[in-house]
Amino acid sequence: MKRIPMEVLKNKRILLGVTGSIAIYKSLELVRLLRKADAQVKVMMTKSARELVSPLTFETLSQNPVCSELFAPKTEWEVEHISLARWAELFIIAPATANIIGKLAHGIADDALTTIYLAYRGDVFIAPAMNTAMYEKPVVQRNLEQLIQQGVRVIEPELGELACGEEGKGRLVEPAKILEIITTHFSRALSLKGKKVLVTAGPTREFIDDVRFISNPSSGRMGIAIAEEASRRGTEVILVLGPTLIPPPKEPGITVIPVVSAEEMSSAVESHIKSSHIAVFAAAVADYRPVTKSTGKLKKGKDSMELRLEPTPDIALRCSQSKTPEQIFIGFAAEVGDNIPEAQRKLREKKFDLILLNDISLPETGFASQTNKITLIHSDNKIEHWEKMTKKEIATKLMDAIQLLLDKKSKLK
Ligand code: C5P
Image (cartoon, rainbow, N blue to C red; front, side, top):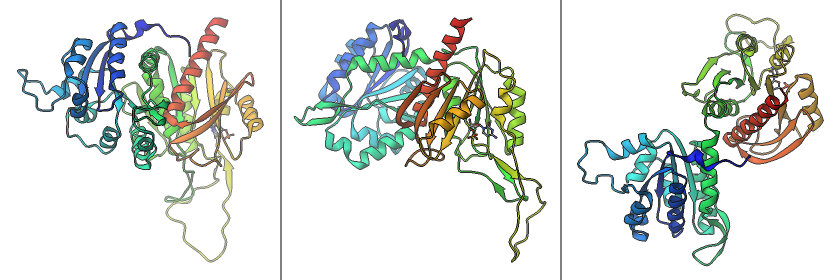
């Protein structure tokens, strides 16, 4: 990522949740840094946080009243946690204890901080801080996993000396690093304004008769995450989505076109491809369909049965035939094994600028999982091996890569 100027944070409305970890002294510094960058900061404290630091300290640093009680006596008619939820452009909890992580993961709302989490619709970051044994406890890891699934971004703690004297993972990330993460987050917002992005996602169904079909377990999660990230960056998104159980995104910038078969997906794509600056082909399109579809329900018999199949349209290949030099096309290659030459072949055949190769034989990668391990291959054969990460994180990194490609293309003009 390029170095981002601090002005990005000017007047940004940041809500900081503070919980009762000894690392709380670092959040005082975080407030100071945010104020120095001209962000507006409001702090919420849990009861145990107040045992460690007086709210007055946070009030003085943030120059705003601290909210800590759900039913605090006040003169205004507004419900404070709801108005704070509406006010904030970003909600960050640092430090986040095992206790708050457990509560948020399970929707418990027994104080102001946990209640606002439920009332808040925007982006949430949490920065855990605790003893290593606590951090590694499976229940804590499961709760973190749950929060990631809910869309929370976790700023992983660092290795180092802990307040308890032990060495290990659990140390709150330094305030300067948290500030950098927040700055990067805001700089990405609206950075692709004016661009149109077409995304295909999910599986397709190719019907044999009225009730049976050929398909695959694709959840559509990867493509949906890409559509959401593209929308966050200010683009107009067309999401052509095959049948999936995951609720489609509701952002106003995303138009969802639900489709069932490869043929339907192809015609939806065809009507938008020309006007799109970026196309991401993340759908797991069925490669074959029955030559004929029977009506009703085929009867079971004793004899073996033959099903004649024909290839479905290769949507990305079709689009590649009219691709303009300004357009950016991204493809996926789900392979058994780390088959880079095969992914490179697909990249060249379909004129992709980038292809994301994932080895579906690895555990917790591919079709229906939350995470993926990607090898990113560029059209100039540059190869990047990414760590295993969530599909949301992959979407963020992919949009960063697309942004760099767009910058390069505009410089070449
Ligand atoms: O050749 P293969 O199916 O592995 O290529 C994968 C890439 O091509 C993916 O990006 C996928 O979305 C796209 N594709 C497509 N239409 C098809 C098959 C694949 O757009 N019928």
